[in-house]
Length: 178
Ligand SMILES: O=P(O)(O)OC[C@H]1O[C@H](OP(=O)(O)OP(=O)(O)O)[C@H](O)[C@@H]1O
Ligand SMILES: Nc1ncnc2[nH]cnc12
Image (cartoon, rainbow, N blue to C red; front, side, top):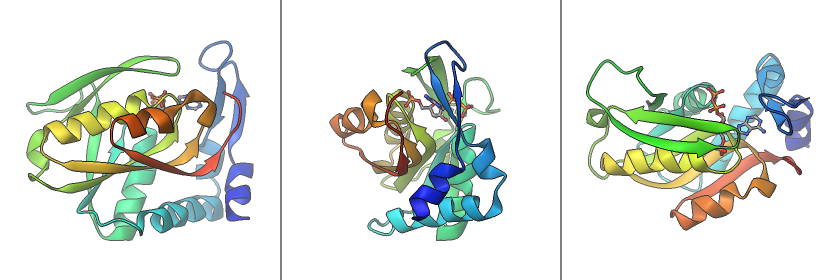
C-alpha cells in the first residue's frame, strides 16, 4: 500500500530527455509532504538490515533522499558530485547512464579507511551511475556493498549490473518498461 501511494505520486514524462525514454519524474513526489516522508521512511526501513557509518548520495536527485535518510539514521552525508564542482583535489569516474554520459567526483579525504557507506540515489536504470559511485567510494577506502533507491527500472538491468560489482540493490518501487 505504501509503495502504491508513493508510486502514484511519481509522474511519467514520455520522450524526455530523449525520444524513447520514459522519464520517471520525482518532483511530484517531492512536492507531496506525506509521500516524501513515506519514501524516506521506506528507505530507512530497507537500511535496517545493515550497519553503516555514513550515507553517500549522487548529485543531484540522490542528494535529496540521501541527506534525508542520513538525518533519519543519525549519520553523516557524503556527496558524490558531478564533474568540476568540488573546490579540492578529487578522484573521478566517467560513466554512461540510460540517456548519456557523465562524470562523478569525490573528495577522498571525507572517507575513513574501512568506513561502511550506504549508497543512495533516486533511481536505478542501467546502474552505470551507482557503479561509478561505488567505485569512487571504494577507491577512497570505503566498504560499499548496499545501494538503496526510491525507483528501480528492472528491465534496464541495473540490479544485475550492481550485483556483478558486489552491490546489493533494493528499491522502494519498481516500474516495468523503460
Ligand atoms: O542507472 P543509470 O542508467 O546510471 O541512471 C540513473 C541515474 O540517472 C539519473 O541522474 P541524472 O544523471 O539524470 O542526474 P540528476 O540527478 O542531476 O537529474 C538518476 O538520478 C540516477 O542518478
Ligand atoms: N527513465 C528515467 N527516468 C528518470 N531518471 C532516469 N535516470 C535514468 N533513467 C531515468
